[in-house]
Amino acid sequence: MMQGYVNKNYEATLLVVVRNHDKLKSVNAVIDTGFTGFLSLPSKIITELDLPWSYRDRGTLGDGSEVLFDIYDAVAIWDGQARDIEVNAAETDPLIGMSLLRGYRLQIDTIEGGLVVITDLSDIANN
Image (cartoon, rainbow, N blue to C red):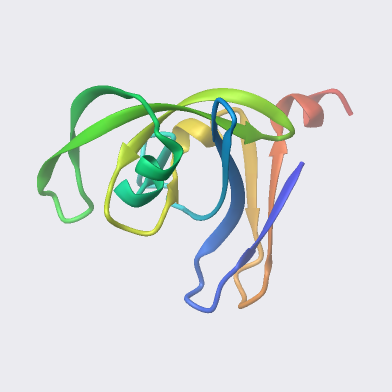
C-alpha cells in the first residue's frame, strides 16, 4: 500500500522515487487518470537523472490536440519494488498515469490534505 495526499489545488499526489543506475530522485507527482502512460517528467529532471532516450510517440492532450513526446527509460520504486517504466518528457508538473496504476486500487479523500491510498489489487484478493 502507498499513501499520498490531496494538495491545495485538490489534486491527488504521491511521492515517487525515480532511478537510473545510481542516480535517484524523489518526485511529488499528480495522479492523472486521463494520462495513459506511466510517468511524465520535465526535461530538467530527465537530464538530471541522465535517463536514456528510447523513442518518440504521439499523444493526445486533454484539449484534443496531438503532440509528440520523447520517451525515456527509467526505474520507479513502486509499492516498495523496482519497476521498469517509460517516462514521457513534458514541461508540466510530474504526472502519474494509468499504466503505473494498473493492477492497483486508487482511493481519494477529496478534501484539501485528504488521504490518497493506492493498494495492490492482488493484496485485496488475498484477504
